[in-house]
Structures are given as C-alpha cells and as structure tokens.
Length: 94
Figure 1 (cartoon, rainbow, N blue to C red):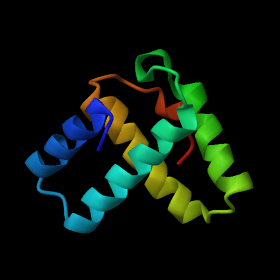
Figure 2 (figure 1 turned 90 degrees about the horizontal axis):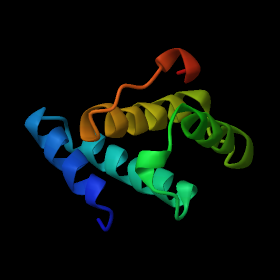
Figure 3 (figure 1 turned 180 degrees about the vertical axis):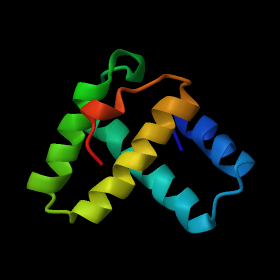
C-alpha cells in the first residue's frame, strides 16, 4: 500500500466491517486504478477517468460485466468515501 488513499480506504472498509474478500478486492482494484491513472494526481481526476477505466477493463482486459461492476464499485467507494467526493453516478454505468 504505497498511495496514501489506500490507507484511508482500508480504514473506511474496516469501519464498515466489510468482509476480507471485499477488502482485498477493493484494495487491489483501487491500486489497479491508481496505476491506470499513472502520474496524474487523484484529486485532478473524475468521472471521465472512471469511464475510461471501465472501457479499459471491458475492451483491453476482457473482463466480464459483473467483474467490471465490482471494480467500479470499489473505485466509487474510494472517491466517495475515501476522498469524500461526490461522483455523478449517471455518468458511470454500473
């Protein structure tokens, strides 16, 4: 866990008493999303980046829709709970 947001996400997951499998999925997914963003600061990203990540997961990684939806739930958790930043969910199809 290198990025500071991952510690915050972990803390928020533990406060909500999520299962170990959900915790692991959310942390792996958030880490993967941060790698997808590259050097761009998380604070400068938003719905369009989440949409691009969704397309990447579907088209380039070939993930099933159900898996993509789980990944997007993790990313939205990171933004909305970890960063306390409201996302326009109408722009991010789950």
